[in-house]
Image (cartoon, rainbow, N blue to C red; front, top):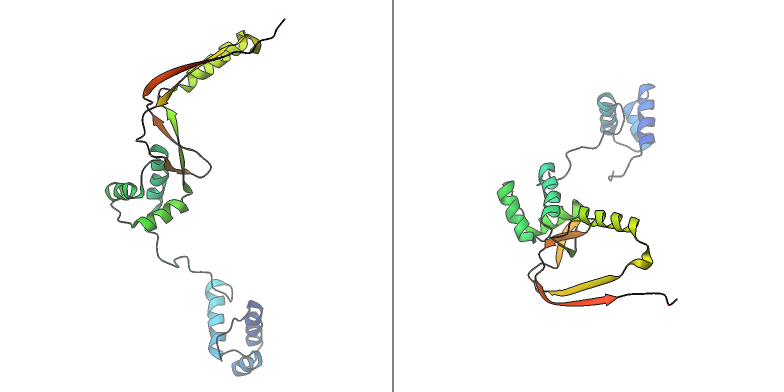
Length: 195
């Protein structure tokens, strides 16, 4: 007989016939299976409690990176999103004593949920707490019609930063950047009401 998939209910029916004193050869010819298959199904019931054994948990090749190394890769994407694959590869060799190809490393990073995206540069001088304090103080004291904004802009002369980086899916890849100020231009914009 050629290999074919035998359903669970057919296997259970064969064992029911076996337990009800049918002859093995008759069961095999009646259901179109081998006699040795009936004995395999009996062994499975005795060992696992079902005619179908549970799947082997150790199927496939074991992973090259363990959970700690994968967690460290995600942490590294937070700390240094601008690293290239060869730099991450060297870091893994030093930090975890692992040798891995770039293509496999890319796949592992992708499996960790880390994606490659356009990086955002945040000013290293920015203080979020000071910004919030200033907003709270001025929103309480002034009306929107009393505020005049003056904006000073300058060109960022630093162009050595990477444009793309890695971060966890759904989050921005951000790198702190020290902006070198070149020529500055001031812009005053005001809106008012004529009385």
